[in-house]
Length: 330
Image 1 (cartoon, rainbow, N blue to C red):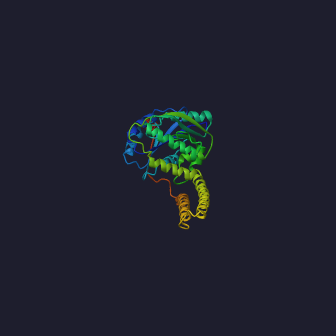
Image 2 (cartoon, helix red, strand yellow):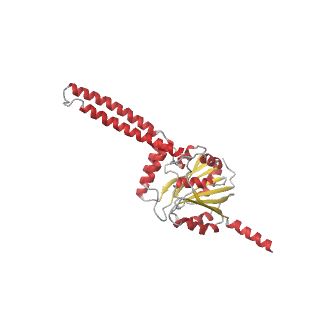
Image 3 (tube, rainbow, N blue to C red):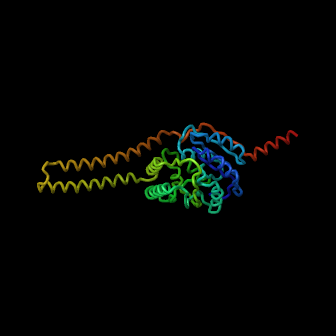
C-alpha cells in the first residue's frame, strides 16, 4: 500500500492511434496530480501507421519526462502494457488507452482514490459507454459470460484502465506467461482493490480493433489460464455420455428382445461409436489446448521484443538546464 505517492508513471499502449495522439499528449500535459510528478511511457506495438513519428514530434515539448518504446512487431496490447510496466519507475502506475475513450483525467482520480482508500489496485469501472448499440450488446454478453465462467470479480464492463502501486506492480511482473490476460492476472494477484466510476467516451476516429475474433481469443486464453472449467466440462460430458450409453444400451437390449431390431448389433454399435467418438474428440481438444499452452510457456520466449527506446527530458527540466547553461556562460 502506497499512500505517500510522489511519482506516477502513465503507461500508454499505442496501435493505430495517430489521429488521437496529439490531443492525448495535450491532455496529459495539462494534468495536475496533487503532490505528485508524472512521467509517461508510450509503447508503440508495431503500429502500421506513423504513430511513432507523431509521438516523436510531440513529446519533446511536453512538460513531463517521456519514454517512447517501439516494439519490433505487433505483440498485442497486453504484451505492450507489460513492456510499459517493466519500464515504470513511479510509486504508482496508471495504464490508460490511447484512443481517448477512457479520459486522461481518470489519472488524478485514480491517485486520489488510492490515497484515500489505501488500496493497492484501483480499477476503472464503466457506468456507461457511448458506443453503437450493437457494440454495447456484444460487450455486455461477452463480459457477462466472462464473469459467469472465468472470474466472478471482474467488473461488469470489464477493465480497460487501472492503477496499481509498486508492490502490486512487482507481483504482476513476476507472472511471466504466454497467451494469458494481464487483466485476469491483475485480479488474480489479489491485494486490496478499489474502483473509480467513469463514462466511456465515443471513439473519435478509426475503428475498434476489439473484433469478434480477438474477443474469442481473449475468452479462450482467460478460460484456460484462470479456470478449470474445460476440465470440469470434459468430465461432465464424459459422465453424461456414459449415462447416455448405459440408457441407450438398455433400450437396445429391450428392443432386441422384442424383435424390433432386424440387423443384430447395428443400433448398439452406431450409438456407441457416435457417443464415444464425441467424448474422445472433445476431450482431446481440451487436453490439446492445455498442452499447447504448456509448450508455449516452456519455450521461455519474451512476451515482446523492443526495437528502440527513446527518452525525452521534460520541457521543465530542459528549460532549467538551458537557463543554468546560460548563467554559466555569463
